[in-house]
Length: 99
Image (tube, rainbow, N blue to C red; front, top):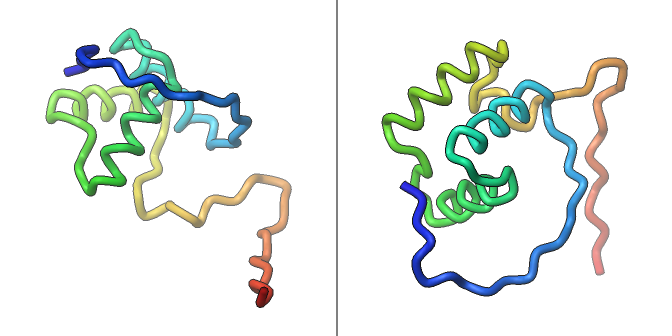
C-alpha cells in the first residue's frame, strides 16, 4: 500500500537511463495501475532493495506476472548483468586504475 504520511523533502534530478523495452513497459504499467509516477515506483523498489526487503506484496507480484505475460517479458533475475543490446558487441569491462 502506498502512503503519503510524513512527506520527506528531497532533491530529485532528471536521469537518462537505458532499460530493456519490455521491462520498462511492465514498470510503467505497474506504476499506472497504482497511479504513481515511474520515478516514484523506481525509488520505492530501490529503497526496499537497499534494506534487503521485497518491495512487492503477493497481490502486486500477481499483477506483475500478468503484465509480464501481456508485454511478452520472459526475463527473470537470472538475466541480470547479462543483457546485451541487439546489433552491438558486448562491452568489455575496463580494468580499474589505481589512484
